[in-house]
Amino acid sequence: MIKMENTLGMISITDEVFTNLAGEAATGCFGVKGMVACPKEGGPWQLLRRESMSKGVRVKHEADGSVSLELHIGVDTGVPIRTIVSSIINEVSYKLEKSTGIPLNSIDVFVDAIIA
Image (cartoon, rainbow, N blue to C red; front, side, top):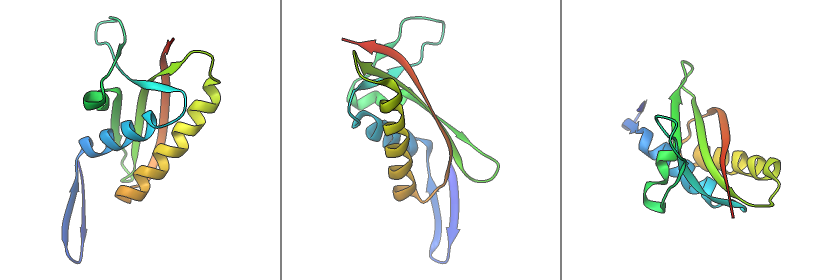
């Protein structure tokens, strides 16, 4: 959770806000099938439904007050992965910084599945 104070009072932003915004922004990009769950014991990757897509996002708080994100996605077959990843980074960065005002340190995108 990030806490900020201004002249009007205290603002708290939970990790859930970051994961939901990032998941929504990423899945809105062309070629993205959805977010995927990270397996704990090396099990199979699981495409997440819309209501639980935030499980494919990890948030790390940096010492300088910025946030780093790790996104796990599944993409369509035959789409240029480099282009999709670039689009996701741009879209997520824009939406999170515009919505929260918190700077992003880094966004790492992992393509964990190619889905037909």
